[in-house]
Length: 214
Image (cartoon, rainbow, N blue to C red; front, side, top):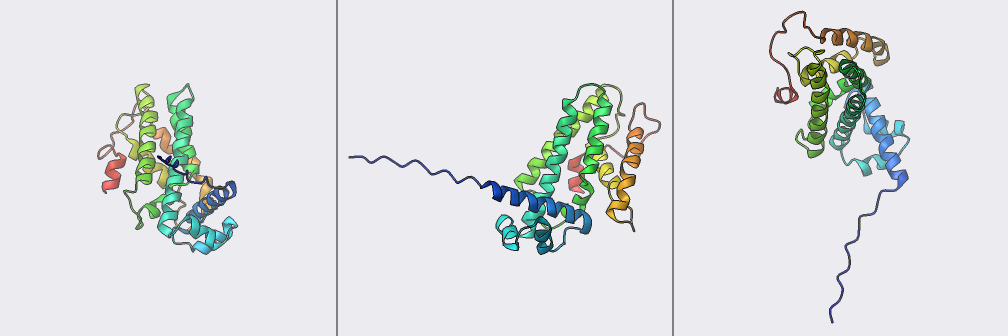
């Protein structure tokens, strides 16, 4: 007599409170990385998140795992801003501007020291997040260029590097002090992207693949 093969058990879904704890940890880590850099003590992150150290390590076995999660979350939130801009009809350059200002609010400049850290640059989650945002921003910029509103000699890397640099606090100032300049100076940069171009840019168009190689 044959016995029925038991159906494989599905992995239990994380409890709602466990998911909330994980989100609080990532949010607290993102805030503290922006304020203090990627070397902030994990117990300080746990304290701001309102959880115990054991909860942090249960979700993220080491600092690299937490840093990677923060990087991916910022990239994903920036990609969501790009999707929202693409969903809006009307002026293509205005959509580009909305995306750039939303990306600046995500403080993607904080990723620079983290991306330069020791965690795996080729982790599948990180690559998926980078590919997603690159494709979306290419589409946003492509629409503006097709409409004759965006100069043709700029690429995705040019835009994202500028957003990152302009959203970083000036040397000698803290984050809140620098925030009041971000959108003003970003708009000055965006006005320089409008077609027709007033001058020729030195060098070549910058894309994300080139940035990763350098």
